[in-house]
Image (cartoon, rainbow, N blue to C red; front, side, top):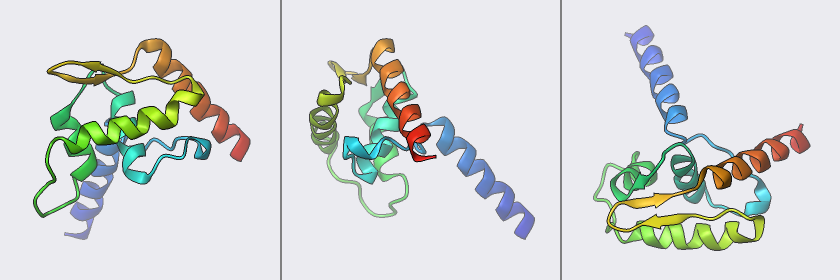
Length: 119
């Protein structure tokens, strides 16, 4: 039984990493834990739907989720925090949010640079 639990915990970790939920953005960006989760999910997808955003934000809550509109609020705050760093988030109306390949590359460059500075 314990081996099964460990195996499942490892699998959860792999899936969270694949979903971008383990991205550690630079501290200078000033993102909260939930904002970082949402940003990581956005970074790993071509388009982040609102449903996928809600899953990234509230995957570990057993109670009722907040209204879907909260995703717009999170994205608004993230946009404001990332704009000074040259990173933009676009809206695909009726679908969700996206980042251009150039914006993703810049975000990854800054993330890697912050890891190098921390080491």
